Image (cartoon, rainbow, N blue to C red):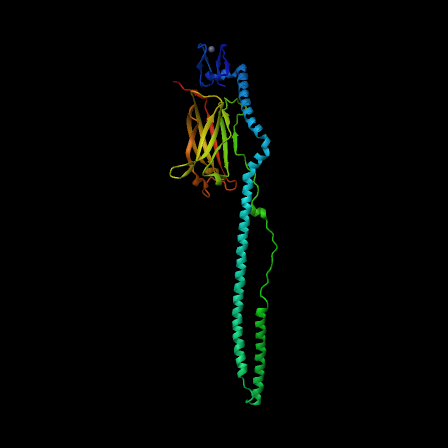
Length: 366
Ligand SMILES: [Zn+2]
C-alpha cells in the first residue's frame, strides 16, 4: 500500500506513505506550495478507487496463499479430520476406562459391605446357638439326674407334669437349633440395573470458536479503521497449561494486522505464568514508522465479570518491534484457583480479550 500513487489537489502525484502518516495539515510533499490533509486526499474519487483496488490486490494475494494450504491438504482431508478429532476421541476413550474403573470400585465396595453384613449375622446366630446349646446341656443333666420313684404319689404327679413341660420346652429348643443351621435368616433381593450412563459418562458440548474479532466500523477502509476487540480462548487448558502458545485471529487496523499471542512463561524460580502480547505484522515493511496503541488486556472470569483481571497499556510500537505486553500477566496457579480463578471447568478453557485503539502511524523524524 505504501507505494501506491495518490493524486494531489495540485495535480502532482505522491506515494501513499508520504500522505497517510500525517495527523494534521502538512505541506504538499511534491510542489511545496500548499497545505493538504491526508483525509482530503483520500476523499478524492480517484484516490478512493486506487486505494480500494490496492487493498483488494493485497487481500487477493493473501487469499491465494491461504487457499494453497487448503488445496495441498485436500487429498488427505479424511486424515486431517481424524487428526482434528483425535483428541476428543481420546478423551472419550479415557473417560470410558475411568468410568469402568469407578463403577467397578463402587461395585466392589458394596460387595464387601454385603459380605461384612452376612458375617456379622453369622456371628450373631452362632452366639444364639451357644446360649441354646448350654440350655439343652443343662436340661439333659436335669433329666438324667431326676429321681421320681421314691416320692409320694402326689409329688410324683407334680414332678411328672413338670418334667413333661420341660421336655416339651427342650424339644422346641432342639428345633430352634436345627432351624438356626437350616437356612439363612435373610434373603438376597436383586435389583434390576438402571443406570443413566450419559449422566455419569459425560456428553459432547458445543465448543465456542477459539478466536473472534469484533469491530464496529467494518465498512471503513482498512486504513481508517482504528478500534477492535480480539478474543482468544485456550481450550484443553488443564492439559496444556504448563506449555502452550496460541495466536488469535488477526484484525486489520490502520492497514496493519494485529493479533494477541498467549503463551506459558516459566520463570527461573519454577513459577509458571500466563504471558500475553499484542503483536502486529504487515505485508509491507513499516520502516521508520511509530504506531501508538492503547490496549486493555483482560483475562475473563468464567461467570463473574467483576472479577475479570484487567491490565492497560499505552505503547508506541516501532518497526523493529513485534510485540508488547506482559510476560507475567498472572500465575497459572492463580488461574486454576477454585472460586476466584479464571479457569472454566465446564469447557476446560480460559478466555483472553484485548480492546485496542490504534492511532495513525507517524513517521519518525530523524
Ligand atoms: Zn502540491
